[in-house]
Image (cartoon, rainbow, N blue to C red; front, side, top):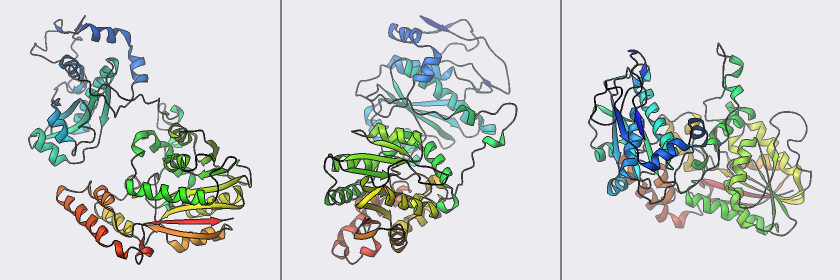
Length: 494
């Protein structure tokens, strides 16, 4: 099977379609470009464009199976058939197949050390910047590669994140006037993600003119006091579509929270048949999943703001958990969980995510669904901890909007640490009696120090080692420093 060039289109001011790999004359319209191997030809014949578009998935895990050179060339061939600014085809493609180089790229480009093929689309910074034409050209090339890779059984990852551009430039010896616009990773997939939820087209498509009634209005502020609950719900629905991103808690934080939840719930006697635990607004379900292991005999359910978020939770759960919708607006009780039906309720890093009045409403709902003597477990971020220092540092670095809000997994969106007395007051106001208080991390543990410093310049990397050293040396003082613990836990009883 052969492919042939499309007819020439001369549109000086458009994104044009000419381009192919090889030494042939671009004006030779009828010349064959390449003979595809039989497997490629079969794949091309077997998957139509609509199928490829609808079944392609982002892949972040690959097998060790090597990708043949002719397959890599085919991806690049398809990339160069994409439209480019004024058909100048001023892309450069840096293709990394060498194992050693991919390993070196790992600290600079996430997942580069596990993919079989890494392709950087580059553009000279002196050309095609008007109207973002360089970016549009690169994006068109990437999409061609992703669809062709999928049709050939490969898994692709179009990745925006480059954690260390200086290191990347050093490794691939990038000239100073050339910029990397896009990173695409390929290999044979070692996962099969399901279809992600898509937004309702009626909310996105405007006919003839922009319909202001459809304009999404979301605050950019990181404080939840600037948000309504409906806006928080909309933001969660949007961010949850990134899926696998939200499975990466700081290990020390995860162990501490999971450990306290398990201990508190077992102490309350809920790890038994017939006992019910309700997780209130679990967001990504990170700790609901943990509770499934900590209290395996209990029946689990959860209350969430949106069905797409709930579907995400369901997909990660190792066993069934009933979903109950939380009413964003309206009078009466917020959910259909029967009153006095649960033996325990959990609220993990949720109060910080909500407008002040909604914090009260959520804790009142916890009180309503619990049986007399039922247990409430709360985890929250302490405003008097080093968390605030890190937040101010991010603010000084320009990360001031909601997208960069410093928070704890599994939170998304606006987030503000709370004063201990404020949380205690809300819990008492809801009708609970606090039985136990605990805390963790008066100083940043080593893994958190590395996590926080990773996005800073390379000169700041040694700071992580010093922060970790301070944590270890200050261990004898941790009990004295308890009022400054970053994470605070409460166990209360109805």
